[in-house]
Image (cartoon, rainbow, N blue to C red):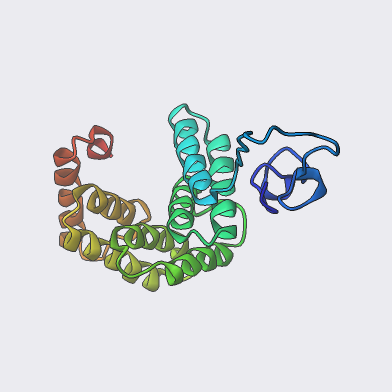
Length: 212
């Protein structure tokens, strides 16, 4: 295992550190005689893939109605990706984790803002869709502490989704704007957002979003 493997307790797993690569615990038993043509298989040496698999596992747990296990999976995926400097996987894990954690959840909201900002700073500019997803999460966490910046961040996510011509991403950005009470004061602009959200939901055949 890697030093900070996701199965270890310090990373949210159930086990104490064991079989760490390069340590005696990972070595073959003394006296073991391997055939010359033996195939030695090394497992757990692709942390970015491991992080992405944990994200998929979290999505499956979320779909199955177990948000607690999903949150644990996404958190472990983030830890694995961070240790491996796998920024895309880290960004995905952060987006998924923030999406199931309401802005009012426990913890210092400024710490959550800092975590999302840290990932945004590391993520290359050509990852526009992923950056927009992070901006949606960032706006959600900024609502209580800095509403003006929250609105500006939400505007940036919506603008990016429009440039990318990604209707599903745009629906998430517009829906988040509405759900976070980031409505503009102008009733006509508020109505425009609501109408766009309904139109996008119909286009994406998202009945849940359309009803909301």
